[in-house]
Image (cartoon, rainbow, N blue to C red; front, side):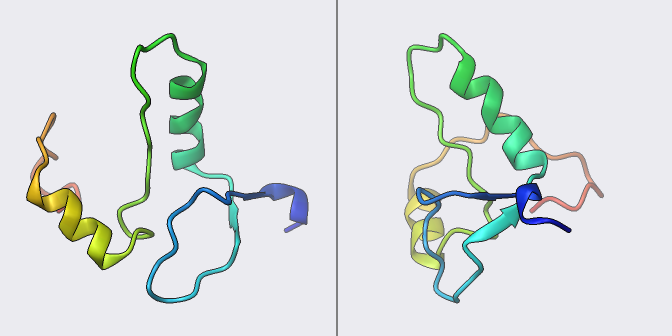
Length: 77
């Protein structure tokens, strides 16, 4: 793999365990782009649940709304 296949994202939350600053372009990146280019009147942050810190997960869990449930057996939690 070449370095050009990786993106640096300084706005990604820091997790409790050190992770590389570079990550491969993936589904999450492809999901973010339409939100960035949209005319939505709100800011949408798309984050990888596995990449955010436990304390941030707990903060989200206190006051969240499920918009769509994962189908049974899809691997989602």
